[in-house]
Image (tube, rainbow, N blue to C red; front, side, top):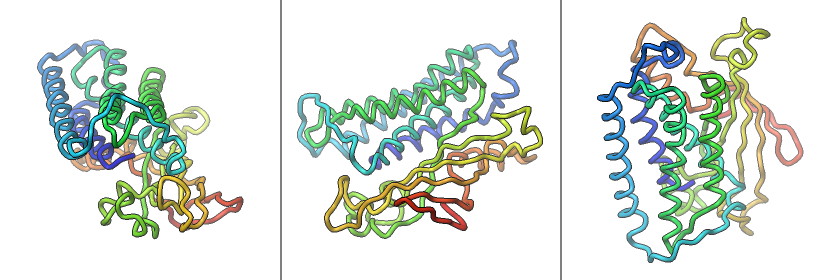
Length: 301
């Protein structure tokens, strides 16, 4: 996933989260007295249009303007980076969808409309970026990216339709790797860039909130307790296997997690901060399976 996608994801997440915090969706949205607030709807739509326009203009100036244009075309990049970029696309689309659903519910829109319109926010925005990629001779649209974007949106939408909450979440964690310095152009020239671009240091997680999923059997479990399955790649200097690197490897990780969205304190500001960073995997002990062997991590992030 290119740096631009991460930046756009963060912009949208922050924008929608501010609106979503105004309303406790899970406890109040079933109240049939809630009706569409046209003022809130207009605020949201104007914010979206403004964010779309400014972001795409900025992207065009920073990423596309210096490269030649071409006819719209696709490329097959599904084998790059051990598919880590595809997990990045899915996660960005998922969290944009989660935040979008909350924002549209905030307006008082009908529940199903809010879920579908908000949930597709990430896919819609990222599809526009794929179109710009497809018109650039330097890059190209990716069917794999489009599929990953759609999968992320549908994970958010399906859970909201069925459960009215996100019991299964996608999360992200990062720790510095030794490989970024070997290819700073693609993996980052400093720590901030590497946080966003170094696939060797990134891990993408699927977390399961045990109490939410198994309400009757695990009713005594803490609301925040979750199990996490992670995926990462390592020993990657370039998109494909490099002869100067060790053999690249896939890593599968099992760990525990804290669902920050389930933690409620008496301080609204603290709640907002915790929920804002709910997309980050909490540091915990972990077991890793890679190269046909198990590895134990006292703390994995």
